[in-house]
Amino acid sequence: MTIDKSALGFGTGERAIYATDPWSTRGRLFPEGSSPTRSDFQRDRDRIVHTTAFRRLKHKTQVFIGPDGDHYRTRLTHTIEVAQIARALARALKLDEDLAEGVALVHDFGHTPFGHTGEDALHEVLEPFGGFDHNAQSLRIVTKLERRYADFDGLNLTWETLEGLVKHNGPLLTKTGEGARGPVPQPILDYCEIHDLELASYAGLEAQVAAIADDIAYNTHDIDDGLRSGYLSFDMLEGVPFLAGLMKEVRDRYPHLDPDRFTHEIMRRQITRMVEDVIGVAQERLAHLKPRNAADIRGADHTIATFSEEMAETDRQIKALLFSRIYRHPDIMRIRAGAAQIVTDLFQAYMADPALMKSHYWVNHIAGLSEPAKARHVGDFLAGMTDTYAVRTHSELFDQTPDLR
Image (cartoon, rainbow, N blue to C red; front, side, top):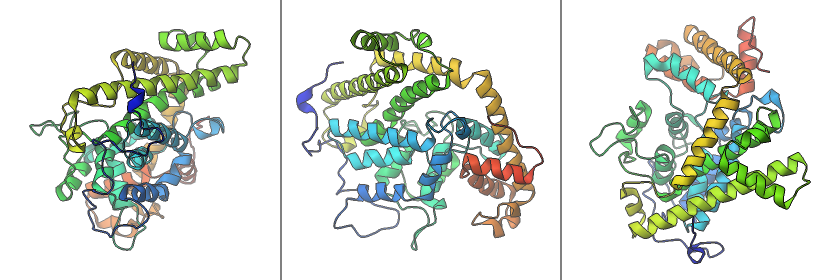
């Protein structure tokens, strides 16, 4: 993929005309005065970092459960890696870096304990009450569940940050009002009744680079963690031509490199090639679209920041490798089954006796609620749990707790 280096924003401090203007935000649900020292997107990013939801990410699973080792990625370290890549892409494309970083930092707030296993289990028990979606849960956290400010619930983030949180993977509605990727989660629809996030349009380019940064980060670090765990080997990576090429490149230059350094040299090249591919594609699409402002990005009928066809095929091959060798490995599946049981058991226990949720802010009012409303509160409480808190709580309430080692 060819990159126009003269158009890159490294070190210039200049924003492109299609970037989101931090001094012309569409505002917040609850109006606030501006800051003399920070843009609204800087304030959003700072609010995100200071939340309890952000701190909890350090004890939430990315792929490997915490006891597996200290060096595996957690949901927090994954988030930081995504933010770093998103900021690099934003700088190269002359976007607002603070907005891109903020969307990256908040994108996984709604994840449950035990990664996607916990999400699947919570969705199953909540299905009679509307199901569970981690993206919708992220929105609930930043608009309702974080309780830190005197004047409002949530963080009162700007329209642009909320739009990026909800739509970073593309529009949720078609132009005719149908679900673009299935039914839109009710919490998102409910919020849009009072603060329209324009679900039928694309998000700004800052949110788009945060979304593709997520793919780049986990494609790379899951390989790294897979090699560390022994579920992957260098021979397995040879099955993906892109990775085989990177390994040959490293071996040719460093024929006697130890495995740890060899792995890192592969990973850093993988990130670089993927980032450069996205930059090249974005430049081509921007040159064709000729956007005059950020609204033209939202009004386009396609994503701007994405992989080329060749890199998209590599992305599919890497995901297939990760699914077959790690995510669906018998050892991981056994652990996933135990984690799902913990989430299911806790949901049933809290539905039967909401008073067990001693630290939930609404616990004294739940008993009189309808079953759907009670279930949503239980879902909020469970989704906010860390892996360690869920295991410890389960061991306090039940005689036997699954071993997640």
